[in-house]
Length: 229
Image 1: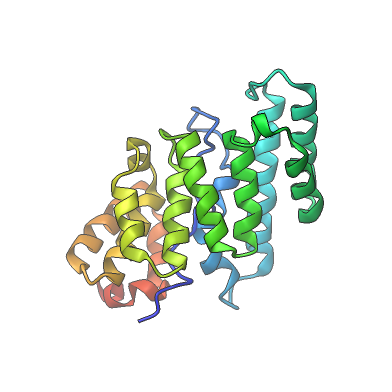
Image 2: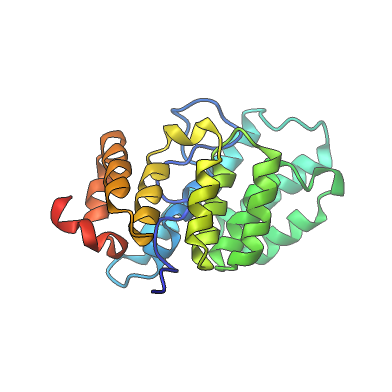
C-alpha cells in the first residue's frame, strides 16, 4: 500500500518557532508543512487556506528578527536574512533562496536559516533534500520539535513511515507538548497496522486541540478508525 502524500506536514497547525520559548508566540515556518500534502493536494480545500499559512509563518520569522532574538552580531547576516524572509513572504522563492545562499558559510547552519531553506524545499515537495536539511535542523536545535516533525514527515513522504515513527520516538521532550506530534503518530500507527496505539495517540491530540478531531474525520489515512472518532 502506498501511504505517501498523506499524514500531516510540520507546518500546518501548531509547531512552535525554534527560536521562541513563549508558547503564546505565533507559529513559525515550521507550522505549515505538517499539513502540506493534506492541504495542497485535496481539491476541496481552497488554495488561499494554505497560502495564508505560508505567509503567516514567514512573517513570524521576520517578527523574531525585529524582537532581537537573532543573536549573531553581523550586519550582513541580519540584512540578508531579513531580505530572504521578505522575499519568501512575497512568494518570491528564487530571490529568497538567492539571499540565503549569499549568507556567509559561518551562519548557514543556524536554525533559522535551515528552517527557511526547509520551507522552500517542502513547498517544492523535494522530500529527499528536505530530509537532509531537516536532519541538520535536528542537530542545530536538538531540544526543539520543529526539525524532528519535519524529518518525520519527509521520511513518510518517501515511503519510510516506520522510520518516521521511530525518529519521533527518539525526539526531544518538546514534542510531547505538540498535538501534531500525537496526531502524526496516530496516523503512522494506523498505516503500520497498530490501531489500538493509534487511538491512544489521536485521543491525546484531540484533548490538546479539538480541531484535530475534525481533521481526523476526513483524513483518508484514518479511514479504519472513522467510525470510532
